[in-house]
Length: 336
Image (cartoon, rainbow, N blue to C red; front, side):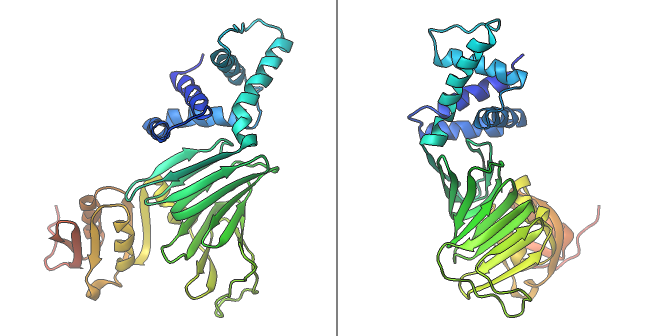
């Protein structure tokens, strides 16, 4: 029996694959997706079923009948029809569902400061946009192209050997097939790529090469290959690149609504926390290098600063309506 989430997921899939689709529709769809994990799972199943033509599961056959009824009001499909009749209906519905992938699919997605968003693309790939991010999605019959204009995104790519998945950012192209990775584009066009699963290739969009930091024991090349728990940092302002081993789950913890720091200078911690709240957090120069270790749930500024005070000898003072100063604690905290 079809669940309410599956029925709603099908309705949304139909609506988003019909034209025209307004920005309000996309916004309402995102609200519905984030309302519950059941909604997200149901929508991912629907997308995956029709984008990969895996129509052999019983629930998928039921959904095909349901979709065909919605798109062909004059026809009434019965479950006892012969396989031949069902197959014809399935092909017709599949063509309706997949037409955006072959005729072209383009959309721009954007998050405001302090806002995050989860997206499911027509091929089953999933995106998680971090705060203050904008990207363009372009799908065709032979390629999946993403342009990251600003901000940070986590990409969970559905494997498709016939169509490469390429993200363009900061003058580079990041190519992945069936993998999970994150990209952050800084305001100065510097780029950071970290892989949590699989493998990606990073290459300049132009013929120019990237100069490597002389301190690195790496053969100069214009293309980089990254595997799980590797991070590439491309500093465009000084023309250097570095690859290091990291805990990718920590770097991408923002996608799970938390931030993880390990002996990170307080100035960097404050800068990162400021990305997720309306307030600005500044640090006294005398404690800017104080190392911080802890796990912070992305929340309101008071809660995050309260936890910071728990794990360090720091206190937060509100200097202005939208600004907090972190300084050395002047009095000992009372233990309960």
